[in-house]
Image 1 (tube, protein in one colour):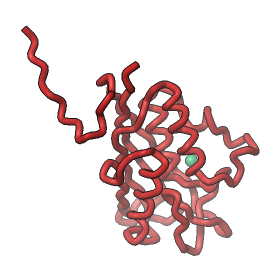
Image 2 (cartoon, protein in one colour; image 1 turned 135 degrees about the vertical axis):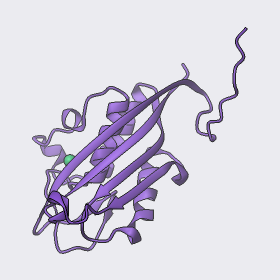
Image 3 (cartoon, rainbow, N blue to C red; image 1 turned 30 degrees about the vertical axis):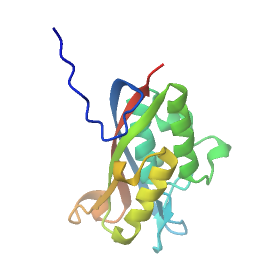
Image 4 (cartoon, protein in one colour; image 1 turned 120 degrees about the vertical axis):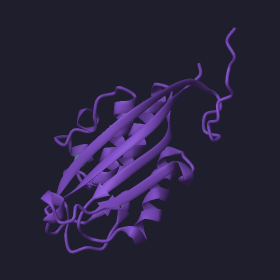
Length: 178
Ligand code: MG
């Protein structure tokens, strides 16, 4: 006889089929003069910004890749190609929204998101709560299910030399019951 153990889902899993998927995302953008620095949907005052076709929000790109990866929907480059003029200069919050929509079509929704920005400068701690708010708002999650961290590399490597910023993200997604 099989005994079912009650699932402690923290309140996010109601109505789900129980199918959970994990996804991982990674992205890098180079610093450039004359660009805005936008991380996690938040513009951060700094003397340089990140180079890219969109607003080059490396954190949101890693989160989108993690979400797409969890749903086995490929990657951000497939859905939002940097050759497409529709995405030129676009806010990556729009790309995140469209990524959530793509998952929704497959009956997936995020359960939680964790992420790490890797950069030497600037200090991000004052901006992290706002980044968390923005990601949670678009993902339809409580802020208690979204985490953004930042670390330096002790001046090692491209991030340590202030040549660019890297971001990592992991997500858990859940399939809604039919
Ligand atoms: Mg990118």
